Length: 393
Image (cartoon, rainbow, N blue to C red; front, top):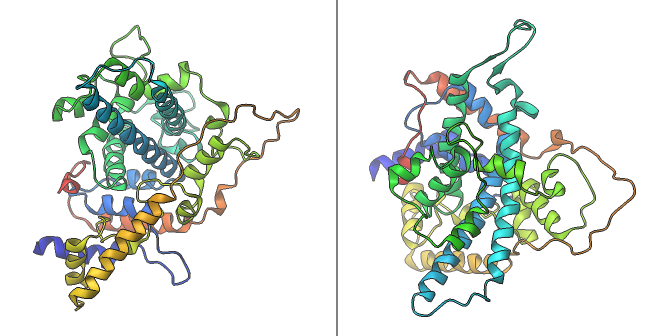
């Protein structure tokens, strides 16, 4: 307990994001990234820190959170249906909602696959981190740096797992890890599934189809694309979903408008639009320093750290107020709508690239990048890159 208090005091003093009085004090993606970086027991190299704080990586992480939020929700509903059908025979004509679930996950996988493809192909700012060496000094030779690719993306996969897990209230740790490894590493290299023993292969084939979509047959077992990239290449993805974040178009379709806001809009605007993405956009006062939702026990623990003396009645009223705020917030949540049945078509498709230089939290991301680089430089530990399991405690 003492060690935990010391860690929280250190995090608050040196690494907690400072909020100006005129700014909304809500949880943003950088807050979760800072917490994950702080909880690493072994340092990562400076090149990965620079890579981890690129805007394109933020979009990838946010798309991951959106996907896994729906994935877990649908998985829970399928489990409830499975328990209910154990007592009675299932109705084969009552599966319309399953088609809707499968379509939602397919659309979210298309959006996520586009963000992941930007990373591995070297689009936008990630070109300097691509594994292929080619330039003026080596114009006559092109060489792949497998070790460079391994150090960046293996660490990214494992840290992304922690980011998603914390963003989704620290639930279903192994389920998130297993699905993330399946999407990015294929089932052959799904080390998380073999390590934890957690698998969904015991589910019905219809349930697996809803969660994973149609299985794409591959001629090879090892040298093959990951399921996420295969879905991008071989399945039918809506072009408007793939153009999110790239071009600025007049959004009339309700589903495209929802995905556009969920992926790109500032976090403080999410509750106003009725969009829920984990804990993003929620008041930081409702969470402790480790971004865990406050209850009567956690609020008492935080008050000890703050060394504030409050009465029992006041603590109870604060706890009741937090519960009521969460209930009001959940009642205003809007689920992802369907596509427009008859989309409006224009003769001229006006394309305007989105200006990413005016993003509100660009300075916050840059300040955090410098902060973690300084921490890495000051660290005298010369261990290899790894990731921490301290977030599981």
